[in-house]
Length: 126
Image (tube, rainbow, N blue to C red; front, top):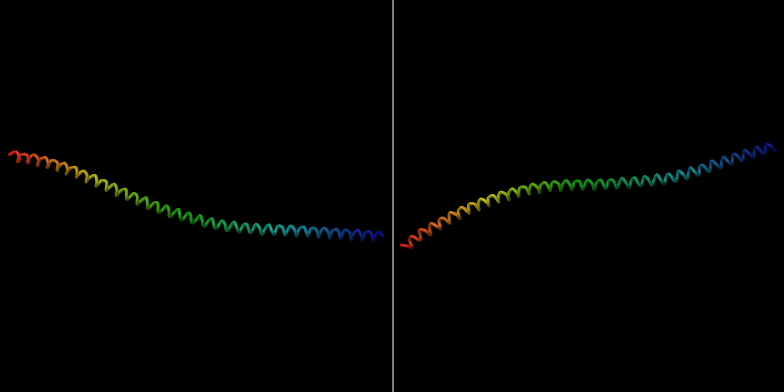
């Protein structure tokens, strides 16, 4: 009878150990499945973030290129503006000189007109 009790206790212990091992394996399998899904989700998110980073980087490069182009264009326009201002100043100077010449000639014409008037009076008086 004691042998039977020992055998039953041993069988119960073996059954309990088998049950605990099987339960542990189920828990481990569930954890593995959960962690595998998490891993796959993280990899998918990482891939999406990498793709977004590449897109944003390409956009940044495009904006930088556009900024460089605009800066070059602004420099060209500034040079053109400076050139035109110099040209305008030169034309203004020429205009001022022409006006001064016109005033001198107008003065000379006025003097000539006076002299003509004075000499004409002499002819009329006689």
